[in-house]
Image (cartoon, rainbow, N blue to C red; front, top):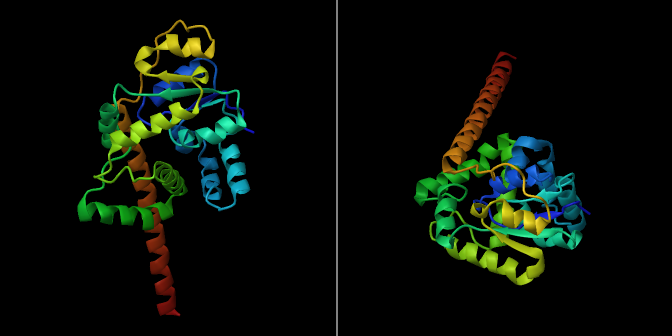
Length: 254
């Protein structure tokens, strides 16, 4: 059993990083997509175990991934909210939302779910899946997570013709239908501390509610990550090339 006391069911780009910061001010240890790569890359291989096909192995891996956390928000945790609630029936459930489905769809399309456009986009995706991620366990782990996301939503959010607003509405409606209203907070981070602290039965902190991860911050972090991956890929490619040339030379000379 995990030790989650707060289960965030809201999709990414619903103020989840601000929500994570707020929950940590309130004393929780909160999981978020950023934890996957930046804090616990050592747990990335566990995502491969999630694909084993054996439910018991997958459950053990999922518990190990979220070990030590008392709260979770954002992807990938929101994908497993029903299982988390089954394991932690006393946990509070928070559904973070945006002002409208259309507002969320625009934000998601511009950040976490950019559209794969045309033949060039398809080629770039093929190269990423079949070449680039083979050189990075971190990227393989993230790719596995996105596979889980696509499976859970039943659609590919990166397809141009995917109705993201409908996907968002369907997701939220499912959470609202399944979680008793007495144990569910529908939360917009614009509302600040009051509804969150009231729901969690905690005093309001004497500091502003966090506001982080706007599109500019997201893009900056994404570019930094991409540059790091490019450098690793370039170094590894040069190393492999050097070994290959050396091997050929050895064969020729001997």
